[in-house]
Image 1 (cartoon, rainbow, N blue to C red):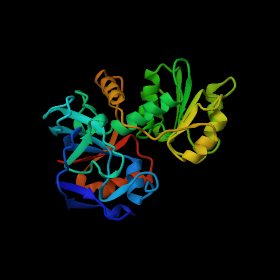
Image 2 (cartoon, rainbow, N blue to C red):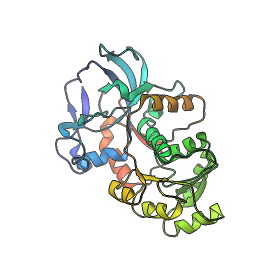
Image 3 (cartoon, rainbow, N blue to C red):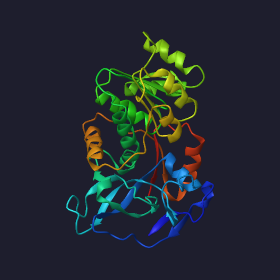
Length: 311
């Protein structure tokens, strides 16, 4: 099969198109013909070797954990899918090697769900990792009825889904940080926009009124945003981050490293089909331009998701 792979860690140029053996089909895995693969910040962190101390890595390493495609074959213990089914998934295993920047991926059945009927493959590939991260962050902070939720980087790949999912969970208000150019986009999603950067706590306090605090803060940025979160929530353990585990835990918050979950992914797919969840794609690129996709993502300020297509 054709795949984008690396044999050393470093800049985007370490990724090259290669011919690699087709993946094996294990007892509880599903062989998927990849139509589209979502590009996520964790992909470039893997490429740079930043996760080597957390998860075993093996080369040649194919990046990518998001996939949308068609089932080619299933393992003998798989009853949930059959050849020809359209699926999407957060195809993460317990080691890093056989990712989704390829023509084929063998995905554990626990990582997949049926693709939303209303979404083309490109848009479907932008949902799994980002949608699950948003949902699991909201669950970790017990966000729900009547809460005021602050979402940092609310126009980004995870943030724009967190805004919408928070509304589905019944929160009363969502405040989202973004550059001014993305404020109208956030209003369309149901959030109250606020410009990120220095002075954020006072701007949020002006929006919230009363004691100037929010009930929940979700951080997808780290750094100053994570520090600000502590000062803006009403009580401890209701702020969460995907960045800097040690810092957020020392602050009394929750660190979230997204887990595959077929049931949760299926629920998100239902929301999409019911017209209650929108997946924003800023740009699609062919698989051969994976290097360019990483360059775009590392520069930041991507609205929604970047997606690679196989043809």
